[in-house]
Image (cartoon, rainbow, N blue to C red; front, side, top):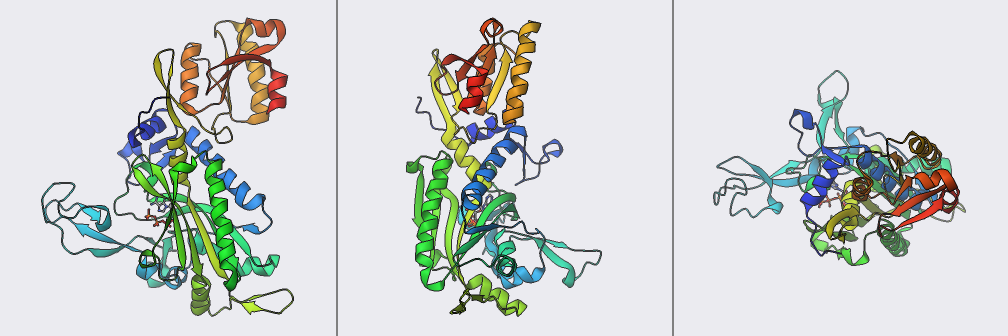
Length: 433
Ligand code: ATP
């Protein structure tokens, strides 16, 4: 394997060239901080989200899923503190007027025009996208695109308790879009204005939060492993009290070695009863939880694991991107875990001008497509080129139909990682996987 260091540019250009991720509104010159997922990108993203749902909801007995509305009553964001405090420090260059998040630059010199000492005092900029609901544009119709999915979970806590009577501890999980008007979106999809989150609010007895925190910390490591991220690239950062939100008693940022540095991949926070107490205060509705035997009544405390889908995709691509040497030439390929690969099999006839091979290959393709869905037909160029294309998008196996197939029914299966070819039957492939 080559020890060439992967760059953000390697990932972004592969994503564009091979149809994973495109700049949003590209045809009109783009819209900063927005990204569109192409056919392979949406497949990879769905595989990641489905894996998360399987691991954190379906495979467990203590989790309940919800899918809340993105638009919510503005009281949600007043009660949660987002209207007053969901802000970043904004500075503007007095010379070229470029704007930056103060904590992301060295304010001694403007990164755009290079002029020194042009920044004034920062002003606090609220990152929520504001909009109005209905035809009347006044204070009462204000709403926001949600900047996190969490509040849609908190506002449904009572609904889930009253309809499912879960025993504490239990969690509510949600996957969905979140929107933040980031001052300077950057680093490909790492910091976007529209992105997807996978969040859990885990409701616990106030005196027992530590064991649930530890259980979730371990579950997060298992998640990273399933994404194919080497353990050595994951770093737990205990956030110091002075850097934590005032209501949080403990927060761990899980950082990953991205091509642009060690940065936050996801977070795990103990939020006490901050959110439920706020809902009680503003709505007047009790958030009390009563144990089934009636012996205890309390407002649960909450542990929140919060995952960003785009950052997971970037971490997966960073880990999977591999350069080795094949026949004396560099080969760049995506060594994706098989369960995440957007395409599981690529099927092609050895020669596309031999109707009998094409017909047989079509048959094989139809059978695999019906069973696995994520199967691609590719008869462009020569076999070597097809293999390279599939390597670059991380397809674990290429299946080639040749004249021997017509004789004895065996096909060639070529392995992405070893580039080795072997002969097997279609039946064998179907039973193996
Ligand atoms: P940062 O410090 O990088 O701005 P944050 O601490 O504000 O992130 P959280 O509010 O904890 O982020 O959000 C939870 C998760 O949502 C993050 O760990 C990240 O995976 C994802 N996320 C947050 N902001 C963005 C964004 N602008 N673009 C893509 N993903 C994001």
